[in-house]
Amino acid sequence: MALRQYLTHPDDDSPVIAHVVDGALQVQEVNPSGAKGEPFSVRTGPGLITINNDTVPILSVQHAGVGALEMLLRQFELYNDGSAVAIVDLIHGGTLTAPAFAAVDPASEMEFDLAATAITGGRVLATLYVGRDTTGKLTDDINSALQINLATPGPISVVVTDENEKRVKVMATLGWIEK
Image (cartoon, rainbow, N blue to C red; front, side, top):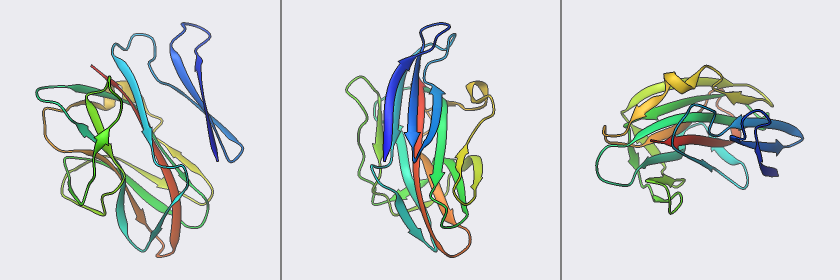
């Protein structure tokens, strides 16, 4: 079970999120100093998602409004319970099969989906290989690497592939700032 606690950074009072997942503490800055905009986060859950010999979009977000919006992706994370190796792609602009988008928050211009069953097309923005009993994180400076102009249509999706043709159990989180 994941425990989420909202705190403030000791140096500049910017918000951070601390997660305790199966005994492992993970901390991410949600709105680091110098980044302007509103911070938001969505996750799968509360339990793990099981993927059997397949490639599945497990979490997607897209711009729900009209016009331009810039998204500064600050958190892209996946936890694997240790049953198999997974390949995780972050894809922008793919076409989802059977999505059911819902509002992230009344203050957000984004909506999220957990129901899609497949994805075609799109551009891969990042890839993680998540091994047995590990947490995969995009740890590069994503402040500049993943500033996404959402005037280009299509969702941003976390897509998991069960690499070893075994059953993989995962959960994911995306966190961003809207500008």
